[in-house]
Image (cartoon, rainbow, N blue to C red):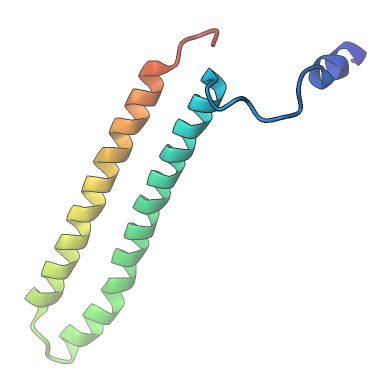
Length: 99
């Protein structure tokens, strides 16, 4: 147990240097996190569009206008998701066991 504690306390408490492999991986992971957040935000926006559109259509508005806006938001989500997937695949491909 003491060896584990000792092993955890040895080394610099500072963040990895910006030019290190660890820092580069951390930056790429942050980019992936940011992209995932953008996908989630866009999905919430689409969800928030649904109820008001439903109410307006029930009140007699043309549903095609609302459907077009929702299709545009869905296309945006799909593009964000594709970019996220590509970033994750590049991240996974760059990982090497033992790094």
